[in-house]
Image (cartoon, rainbow, N blue to C red):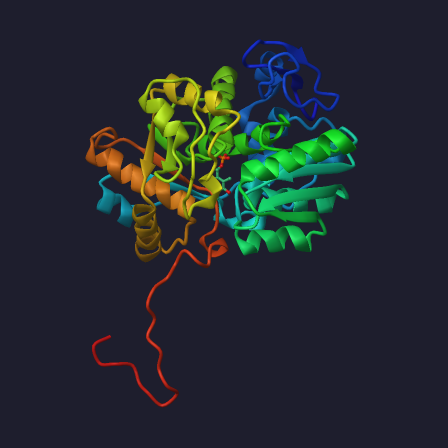
Length: 407
Ligand SMILES: *Cc1c(COP(=O)(O)O)cnc(C)c1O
């Protein structure tokens, strides 16, 4: 049996096929991101879901459906198989039963970007890449620079000066060539594009290399396996570039093709954004297939501060095809949910994940999520990466004071 059943790259817009044995970024004809294809008909006979039972609890347990062909090229920090936690208190409070949290807060580098980085960096190594470059809002740069360090690949990272200090530190400590730009991620992108063109560096900007989706897709594979191949009715995802949502949708379609799923109907996928940056929601409301640039975007959930996603049409397709929807929530609402999740469930989720709870509440109130439907919320990172989003009053005691009677 082969380690990987990867077969080719293809353009979702004009269907041109490319080889996955050489570096390939966007479609040469139309500039679209490319998708990775697998020999699913061979896999269907060669691979049984029972084969998984003896494998390590990380994302490489699905190596047949990942693009790395030689196991020796796998770069791993043990990422994947994060917990799927049932939330019984929040469930009652929001009125959704059962309600599950897929918790990516426990993954290396503190955010689910580790999945895309592990698979993307491994494939880059397989392709003989020695140097990568990318613009980032923080978490992606942190993950890619750390995995690149492990792979002995040089990295150049450009991030807005306002990106969270912690993610800046993660890049810096990895030994990456790190630059701050007094501007937005789109400005960082322009600087990276120029360096890539002039110096021939391998561009790993969001969706400009096809393998990041494959890493993020494993969240969908895990959710299916953790729910014993019975998918939930609804899945909510905090959407920036939308790579995770595209990936999860791709995972479900591939599992469907393999015949592993008990129910044929896919979950309704919900793209959640902040009302301070909601281009996908705006496009969905108007029934469009592509989004427009969102001017002056602003949100505490920096991972979803993406004014124009290069793969927006793929996100919108996934939402339309699963009869899902796109919802935006205010920062104040998501911060409230962040606190509630910690108080009621003991889980310190990131603001992006909290946005999904705010959206779930709204959709349940509107009866878009029906009573009795099962719901999975994706928490994409650890709350501890965002020290400044929690600002609660804490009383201070002198060394000789005691705790006030009222507490
Ligand atoms: C990047 C990021 C997102 C958005 O992910 P996409 O797949 O690009 O939509 C959400 N949450 C966190 C914490 C992130 O770092």
